Image (tube, rainbow, N blue to C red):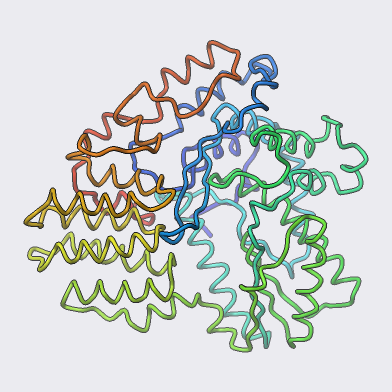
Length: 492
């Protein structure tokens, strides 16, 4: 598509600049007064003519249990959560430098040509760079809609069945040694596990150093880790292609978006064979198919569209009453929690509230929104945006603000929620207590996010002290009401 370009089409220098961008380093949604771009660029420039080994103490580094900063995002308002990691920026730029060295980058691109040689197995989730005014993340989502959803509908002309599946806890289960298997081939990597001339072994070693020498799992929360996962998943695509050819299975089409698979076949027996083969190939990598999310259907068009989107289309007729409309959105959130269509519905509701001159029962609307955010933590940012517009319409703004804060702050592992609550409560932020480190640096510039004790270079440490990731000028310039373009991915 003309609005985006695959990073596999970039040369090594362009790829490095792509990975050094704020939204590549941190692909979770943060308020605009946080940015890591300047820090990453300055660290990268400093590292350009230096060897990392001369600037760090590896023994100290490997002894740190929390080298990276974890932001915990609650998944259901209860005891389920996802740990996003802000990788230590210096470790991050060391990894990017390795991956984007010219020879290494060319080797990675050549491996993807091998992975993608079978046109019947298509990977549609390689990270992209936007070529228009939208963000890279917006273009990544558009790529899913255009290439996965629309292509799935088109494949209904050729195939009779669709099988859906994904990998259970994919990122948390990836065995770091398997990255070397994917880049070097398994036999080569296993015969030379300590050979640091092999790119796969270098990446494996650096992934372990990021995680206190752990070999299971890779950090979540950055585009580079999405890309590293694609290396392994691409290798699995290659192995699957070879096994299906050996078994003389030829009538199929597979669309893969990261760890989600859509398998199109003429009969369900073939679909089951492909699923079984895929499952067997994954076993040596410590991965397994998520049986609870595996299904088959002869209704390809219905299955091509996500269930939450179809459900919302049935009930998304405009309502003159904001409360009735919001109650419908809440009902949808119960059936399809944390879904993309829920965010879309709330985004439209946010714009409607912004344009409304007269709002009935704002406190009740705030209560409903808080309930939606509590049970659907992915909607925290958009719900805070709407609530910020309603607080001004409330007859008891301070009282209702405190109740919203207490409710959402009391969720277990509420770090991500605290970040957006702080943005929402900007006007009275000094009256609230936050524990999340990104919130603490807003109120205390001396607060440190990462442990730098393993860095031996005083110049590197100085970069961290002088190059803050929080911009007070931007924070001070923002209105207490959150504008829609702060949280709308698709805003220009």
